[in-house]
Length: 237
Image 1: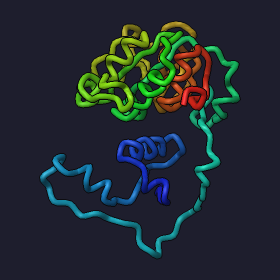
Image 2: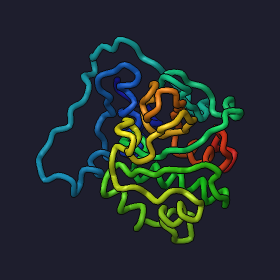
Image 3: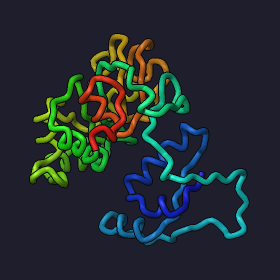
Image 4: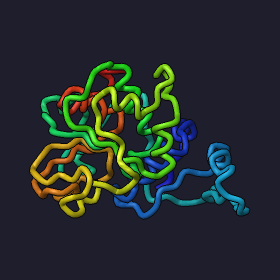
């Protein structure tokens, strides 16, 4: 699946990673965004190897082409028990939740935590449900403690999360995204309802087979943590 268009070009590398990460959940084998200056800038300092950017042929044939007007899109969630069981976040306001999980390769990047922190800053409130934070990498973990959040008066994500009553950021790991043994950090060992920034919500994916997982963006996850219900993040923006 190849993504293009003015909106895709405006995305950061981390945004593009999220988009391509979810291709597998849509039945694809690979997600591609054509390399551009954003790509080249991202690679500076990350590799000393020479490389050649490859692009689709102008005459390439595609099985199907889809066009979306992003100005008409709204925050979505994926309801249990499949990533394609989508619904508008605002249509799920009645869903009471037990916990929030922000992390994984899909939703645990630096920009993801920055997004969640912005919601908490805007609200100026404490979370109403346990909120677990699992950075995707060691660098992301360090960013949470060192990078100031825009609009946060110099505070870092870690400081904002602590003030909001979230759990202390865990060491980088897959955490409860893949379930794992009962002592896995943030695993659902009892039937609960969780809003998660991970990429899969199949039965048992985060632990208990009767657990219910609502996949969402970091914005929606943070907003939901503040209310205790699935929440459209625009309520706080």
